[in-house]
Amino acid sequence: MAGLNKGEVRVAGTGAFYRAPSGTVCPTDSTTPWSAAFVHLGFAENGFSMKQEMKTKGIPGWQSLEELRLIVLSLIRSFNFELVQSNKSTLGLAWGGATITSNAVTLGTATIAITTGVVTTSATHNLAVGDPVQFGVMTGAAPLLAVTTYYVLSVPTATTLTLAATVGGALIATTTAGTSLSITKVTGAYVLAIPDASMIGDFVLGIDWSDGVTSQRFVIKSAQQTSLPTIKYVKDDAIRYGLEVQAMKPSDGSNSVLVYGVDTAAVTA
Image (cartoon, rainbow, N blue to C red):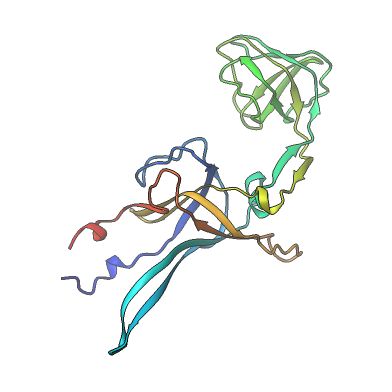
């Protein structure tokens, strides 16, 4: 029989929110890393809350003042959290599934040499060390990937450069030669395409929280926003994106919310 035990008091000391496209394969425990399809949504303001709302209808009896049965009409589970990091994912959610297109500067096509990783552009690139660049459709040139930001490490000539994964990081030496249909300089400029209500779809939401060695993971395979946030743009606080997401019935018939955890108190008497 359970008694007073302060060691069983839990605090969600830290955690993370993840988003992935609908249909993404989800982990089935609380320790397996999220796949690359899940995007970390960044810093959040003090955790989250889960609201459970069950609507019922009572059946009265002629001979009784008390109701005889309760029929469950609906069961709604929703999650509320506030994001404070502005990036492509948070902006998209704040605007109801908006897509963001980069207004990058095209520098021509590119060929990438084997082992040395030297990138040769078809036109003068005018890049400087530290500039961010991305490739379009690529053939070969592993481990370089399309639509991934890299940083100029060196500029041997007006049409050649080498790359690193971070500013001033290690040289990326390709294991195969390759080509890209385009190489662009990432300027930070973008266009945000705001959808109307009929275009707002579902996505996969993942939530982790931990308290020392105790952890818990929520997987919502079919998450939909129930409202769009009121966003304040003020000089004395961070821009915040308050989101409310409802768990819908997944198309595979599984539970709307899957919960995994590591906690000895949860599995012992």
